[in-house]
Structure formats: structure tokens, C-alpha cells
Length: 316
Image 1 (spheres, rainbow, N blue to C red):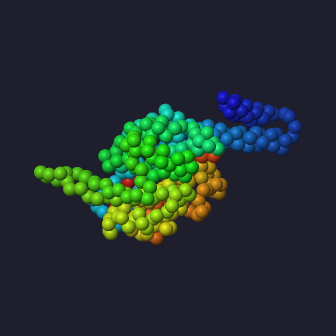
Image 2: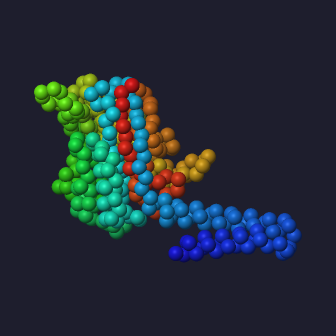
């Protein structure tokens, strides 16, 4: 209400200055009008960034074509979520239910959640929502190939084992330097069920808080297998061998605030804006980074709306 009142007052001031005919010289009038417009623009940006955009939830459709992708997995639809920060600004239980409803409405074949469920750490900063609460709200996520997750730095700063237990008790499988074979059955053959084709998920631990065991984890996957790797922090991408066709990550929030031309002011990555958001292709394989849903440190988003991504993976 205060923000609306400020915006309304500034708007009335600008209108008044435009209509005012005789008060000082023309350049003084232009100065007052210009100042009013600048103040109105700044107030609108603050109002949008702190009240409107963080409370939005958009669905983004993305398609990635991979040369080594098997035809059997063509048009695989994966819903990608990350950085929910449950209990933080604008992320209450009702918002979690909205996230679940909108994700399910996309009818993905697989759902992945890429860490940072926690807002607060229960020590220096109060825990905003218990793992048992947000895990119960997310248990209604549905996909025929399953719902899978990795944990992020905020989850481990709190207690990763507690977060993992809560998620798995509610049907969300957590992979932390672990692999999982997913048997994919798509379509039907005449007189019999289509045989299963193996897709391997490789969950790699958070780079900031956990031991990195990339080679040891990948060594458990058969050669020439189709691999989707899941992790929280995209900075591990240069360390992955080419046999990992696709890595999915979150963590960056897209910088949370992104201005035209200059881009993001803050980016929690050792690579600057290189792995900040979206699809990146390097060294013969692919990375996709979602900008996530919640906020961290400051409850603001500007030009980086909270998102659910429906990622379609195709062969070239």
C-alpha cells in the first residue's frame, strides 16, 4: 500500500508539472518534469523488483538438440525446478501448491529439482519452513519417469541429511554423487509392450559444500550410455567429460537482478556471467541453467522472473 501511494503521488506530481503553464522559466519546468519522471521510474522499478516480479511464476519452454541423443528419447520432456527457498519471501505453502499444480499441468515425463529448498539455516538465520512441511507440499508432483533431486548449498548449510530424508519420505529421490538407471518405455508395439531403454541419471554433489566425486560417480555408468547429470552449481561444467551429454543446474538465480545492456550486477559463479542462465554449449556437450523460483539474501528479482522450465530434448 505504501509503494502504491508513493507511485501515485509521483505520478500526480509529473502530471501537475506537465499541465502547469506559468511557474518559472521553461527550463525550470522541464527540469521539474524530468526529475518527476526519473523519480517515478525509480519508484516503479523498486515496486516491481520487490513486490511484483518475485511473486510471479512463469513457464518457460526450451528445446535442446543433442547430436548424440538417441532417437528413442526424442522429445523427452523434463520439468526443471530449482532454488525454491521455501518459507522465504513469496514462497509459502500456497505458492508451493501453485508450483506443483503448474508443473503437473505441463505433463512432463520427468521432473528434476536442483537444490536449495531451504531459506535460512536454523542457526545464524531462522529457518523459514521445516523440511517436513515443504517436502509434504511437493509430494504431489507427478511424472511417469519419476521425480528426482539434488541438494544445494543452503540445504547442506542447514542439514542435508534431514532435507534428503524428508524429500525421500515424500517420493522425491535424491542423488548425491549417485547414479540411477531409469527404464524408459515410450509408445507401443503391436501385440506386446515396448521394451525399456535405459537412461542414466547422475546426481553430482553441490560444489560449495560437498566432496566432488565426478570421475568415481561416472565410472559406475556403462560406456556409451545416455546420461543426464543433475547438480546444483553449474561451475562443475568444465570438469565434466564429454560422455555427459547434458548437465542441468540452478544456483545462480540468473543473478536475480538483470539490467538491459549491462546485464546482471551479481553472479554467484567463478565464471562471471558465462554460466548464469539458459542453454550453454561447450566442448561437445550441453548445460542448461534455470534461474529458479525463490530469492536469496535480498528478496528482489528484476528482469529475471521465477520460472518453471519445460525442457524438451531432441536428437539432431
